[in-house]
Picture 1 (tube, rainbow, N blue to C red):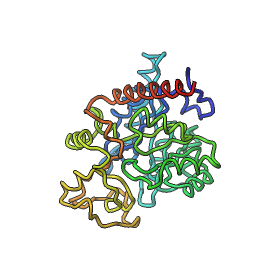
Picture 2: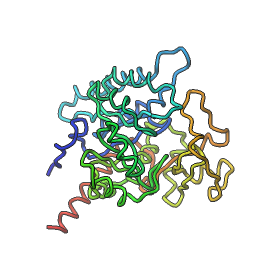
Picture 3: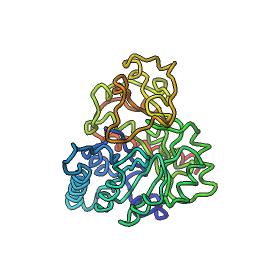
Picture 4: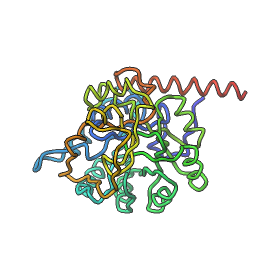
Length: 330
């Protein structure tokens, strides 16, 4: 029986499974986004991944043209199996000097879904709404969730414990319950959503969608070092370390990559938010260039392959888990 998603904004309706592929720093490129959308889920990428040399045409404009044209061709050839819409992540932090330019480019391309991070700003939401887009703002607690909605976001990405990259520390049970006490708009839940069973659990907690990233690192289309992909496949939840050292924001990283950089993952110093920098001139310390982010759900990833295979597996698991629970409650 098809699920009822009529309460959601149109851009989030009709997905093959209720899933958004999260924007992955460096890793998410047009090839991955296109594959995700063709597979029937929302694909996304950070605007800052599209970096051009000074004086060149904005690469973000080129990428958005490529994505739109390829998805249009797919839809014309597959009218009964259209691609899902895509999303662009905007880092709303004072160090992102490109933000205003990137907002203009996204509005010009009528980007359907905007994901905002590290700051909720009214003018960013207004830019999205000016072209008919919706805004999902990622948050790690209920206080930030309220601020985001007050400033005009349409929905939320609840980033709970276990999520890859920048991640919250709260249990998804607590975080979703507190948000749903006052907010009935669209919410995607992030935090070790790597299987169909975990996607179904997210729905049971009150989320409209799951939000998953780490499984897509180990795909053919991902712009990731082969060693990174192999470490994802060979690691599990106990191989993840939670640290603020590398960006100034707490996040989850592969212990193996920390050890390879010559550091002890059990004795990492902390850093504060003042060390965050998303400017054009930002440069990680040399020892941190191969520190690899990952969520705790990677135990489900057994091999590197096409992004579409991730969606196939999660759909099969999601439907099977739903049928099993339905039978138990019948």
